[in-house]
Each structure stands twice: as C-alpha cells, then as structure tokens.
Length: 466
Image (spheres, rainbow, N blue to C red):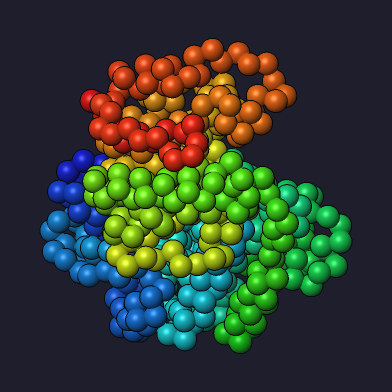
C-alpha cells in the first residue's frame, strides 16, 4: 500500500501542499520528496548537524536517500527517496496507546533535535506513522536550526494534535477520538478544556499545557502583539517543557475494562476447539494459496487471524470497530512476524474513515487506500447484513472493491451469534441464507473453494473477483 495520492507521472501527492519547504510526488510508481530551493540553507544545516544520521540510527525517522534533483517536476535543491511504508493510517484510526506512542515519539525526536542544535518546526500527528509495531516519524523536512532563544513554535500544535485528543479519550470517553475527523488541525484547546472534567484543572500537566494554554490562546487572539511579548526561551527551559509534556502524556492511559469485542475469542463458546482449529487451518490454507503481500482483516478483533496471514510475509491491516480490541492488540505487541506485520486500527465499516481536509483530498478515505491483494472477512457478514441492515449484494460489492481475493465466512441463522442479533429485533432478513449469500456474491466473485467449518453450521469461502 502506498500513501494516498491523486498524482500521476511527476504529479504531487494530494496531501503534500501545505509545507513551503518541499512536497511529495510520485514518478513511475516511486515516492519522492522534493526539497524547495528556499529551504536549501536549512536542509543543508540539518544534514551537517548529523541529526538525520542519529534519527535513522535509532529507527526514529523513516530512512531516505538523496537521488537526482532533476526528477522533481519543479526546480528542487534536493530530491529524497524515503522508504515507502505499506499503509498510511490516520490519527483518528488509532487507539489511545497508539496515539500516546506517537506523542512520545514526537517528544523524543525533539530531544534528539535539540542535542544537534535543531528543533521541530511542526508537531502534527500526521507526521507520525505506525510501522512494524512502533511509531515512526515520516516528515524529513520538519526540522530547523534553533537560533537564539525563541519559544517552541510547535508547542500549540503538539497540544492540539496529541495532548488534547489523548486527554479527552482517557479522561472522558474513548470515542472522542472521532473529533479528529472533524478537523485536520487537531482538537482546539478551548474545546478540549470545556469538555474535560473540572478535576483535570488540578492535574499539573493538564492544568498547564491544556487549560492554561487554552486561556493563553484566547488572550493571544485578542492581542495581535502578544507573540512579540513572549519571554525568551532558553534550551534548558525548552527541555523542561518537553520533559513536562512527556510526563503528562505518559500518565494518560486508558483503563480498558472489558469492551464488547475485546475478549471475543477468549469467550468464543460458539466455537468448539475442533471448529476453531479447523477454521484456522482452512484460513491458513486459503491465504497460502493466494500468497498476498497486502491484506486487510475486516473485523479483526485482536488479530488472531491477522497473525496467520502475517506469517506468510504479508502486511496486514487489522481493522476493528472496537477500540478495546485494537488497544489490546497494540499493547500485546508481537506485531512483527518474520517478514510480515500486523497493524491494528479502529474502523467502523458501516461509517468508515472519510476523505477529509482540503478539497477532500488531503487525507484519503479508507477506500482510497485500497484495493489490496486479500481481504479477510471472518464472522463479519452477519454484523453488516443483520446488525446494520446492509443488503447482502452491497456487502459483496464492498468486498469486491476492496481486494482481488476475499476469504469470507458466512454465519447462518441458528448460529448463536446470529441469534443474539435477532433476539431483540424482528427478522426482516428473508434472503439471509446460504443460498441468498451465494446469489449475492455471484455477480462479483468466482468461488475458488468452499469449506464447511467442522462442528458448526458456518461456511468459509475463498473468492476471486470477476
């Protein structure tokens, strides 16, 4: 998977227009970054400082190499070829632990930058990605020399992109991560201050960096000359600020009690041991037959079957609607499996991640980040068809748009999990049968293999798009 882009040939990546220092573009399927001539002195100073070498050595910044500047569609000081990540996720798809790891990475990078006489000039959460089970920085041009004693220019942005949304998720309700969908600029500090409980004003970190910061922001907006009145900020003071932010962020943990799906497989009384073993064996065989490089596991829970796919060397994005399941998967670790990888993310298929930002192109929708080689849709169809009233043909169409191959599980009426969905509602789903499902997928897929799950009424299919 590649960063979302409407670029063709030497065109710019759609979400890479805000930074005057440079931009991303694609040429012949290769992702490249142009360094604008206006940023030449700054870029050369960062290189000479040894900062890039230090960040690459510690695995904090995605590696890059310099290539021919003539590759850029406009005059460029340098052209860089960064290592391309297999999937670009958005902060509103992260669980609290993932957002916290991204925040702590940003603060660590600021520390390393200060060690080299540099500083982060922006602290956007979109500058961080989750890769091989950890957070990694991706914006090579976010650094500048720290000349004199100015305050940290990225301080407010850090608080809006990381501190405010993390505080809201851990102190109020984890579902408030959805506020990040509403604004690519993060969560306004005055809004966060209003939504947070009054008790958080007594917590030194949140009281200072969020509540007092929000009040100071309103004061600055009322005083056009306030920025010029700010006190000088020594390196020692700046390191103290970073340390204080680190301590505040580190304490913002989500206490996951037990969410709807976080213990799904542990409580899988609808499966006998033999049925689970048979399902795992069949899914593994189907995956090996396809030999995918990129996989989406839709409704992945904590990633039990995602790991089966990753063992083949695939990069697997394990989507689940339940924040608790994603949090548990991330905290558990072990997401790098040989050459494969599992990336757990939060996603509601009935209301998926939209395209947001300028012209609805700055941050791509989840659909625009596909298709992939294989989709796993295990124990999923009944939740969409019965739980969300999505007709089976539309479920089939979505799967066909998402991947060349699909491994899908059909769970018929009479199964305990379907009975739970129908227990409190009228059964208005006469077409929800094996025959109805096979009729729904027929216009979109060829059935390559069909396998009954042992000791159950469930059926697994290996499908290939027509």
